[in-house]
Amino acid sequence: MIFYPAIDLKDGNCVRLLRGDMDQATVFNNDAGAQAKEFAKSGADWIHVVDLNGAFAGKPINEKAVEAIINASDCSVQLGGGIRNLDQVGKWLDKGLSRVILGTVAVKNPQVVRDACREYPNKIVVGIDALNDLVAVEGWAQATEISALELAKRFEDIGVAAIIFTDIDRDGAMAGVNVDATAELARQISIPVIASGGVSSLDDLKMLCKYPEISGVISGRALYDGQIDLGDALDICKKHETKNQINRN
Image (cartoon, rainbow, N blue to C red; front, side):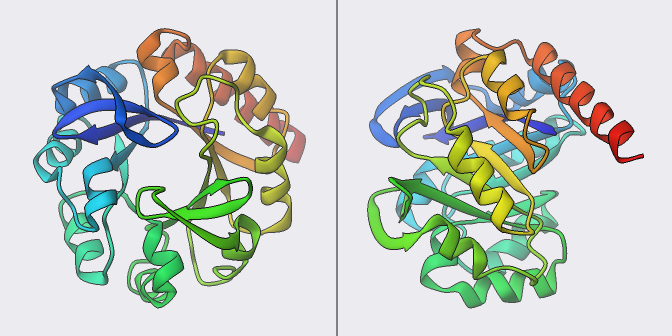
């Protein structure tokens, strides 16, 4: 299991929102590059980044901060928020991103996802953000009638690298991760699933590790609040992966 420390960007700052509410943002660091270096120093291989302003605006906004993150370390970086077309996907990958996350456009223009997967194999992640199992888009401001599973199945067998499943009601609330919903989604599709939203303790992480079908986990606020030590989290995930490899052999 891969542990992804998260950097959510609002107005260039590293923040965390409560259930996606831009008016309930807590600033944890005003230097995104420095935050990325801190994660790298603790041993992170990946960093998960969301351009919150971009998610609402429908176009990339925090470009300088994202570039600072990319250039700050050797960590692989995946980015979501406001990326709506193939040109933007290519632009970000050219800047050094390892993967691009497509969320709103996966609902509103799924052909972009298909074209991106064909053009950039293993570089495209689909972000599925759900409230009461129904997908929300446009920075979670707009509800749909599409279930998380229905959306995920639309992208089977086209080369999506992973699906990030976020339970909006848990995100930033430090209320624990929705393990059951995440594991159930992962069992029903062939695309690797990354858990997000509500991961607030090492116990949450250990619980997720009991489900080999879940390939990764994202956490942000718990790291900034000191509820999770990044080094300990990485150790747990690596031991879990080693155990799975032994079992497979």
